[in-house]
Amino acid sequence: MSMFPGMDLTKMDPPTLTLLGAACCVMLSMHFTVQLVSQHLFYWKNPKEQKAILIIVLMPPLYAITSFAGLLDIKGSKTFFTCLESVKECYEALVIAKFLALMYSYLNISISKNIVPDEIKGRVLHHSFPVSLFLVSFLHPSIHLQNI
Image (cartoon, rainbow, N blue to C red; front, side, top):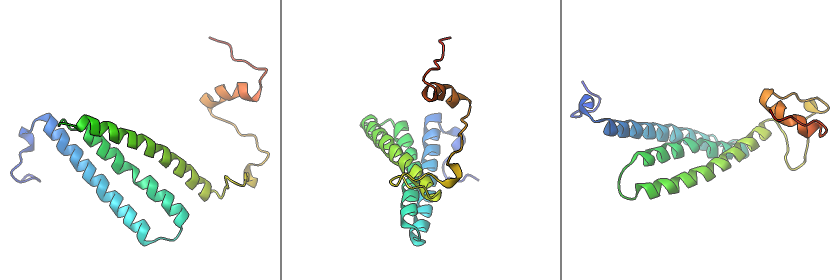
């Protein structure tokens, strides 16, 4: 018994099957996003933090719709995909900024007051391997990395 009556998925060509799978993923993404957004709006307790969360939560459907539009091969879909891709890139920058602001809010760090938490005042911050290679020249201007 097929989940889609009258539709034999085994006899479907790969491009159509891919579009069907992508459409299902878009619908799932939309479903879970609407569910999360409605829950946040219903339990509106911390407006500043929840506004940032809503902006972050709206990112997956935008990715899903953009990817689905990229799979379409109809007249004007290339232009529509390019436009959606531009919107996605701009929205991604907003989401990164909101995520950083949300983390600052959770950690009780103020950007405008330039307050450093007491826990990290005066501590030496050790960075992981790739970052430490680039920070050496900034921390100690007399040290220059040799070209290999």
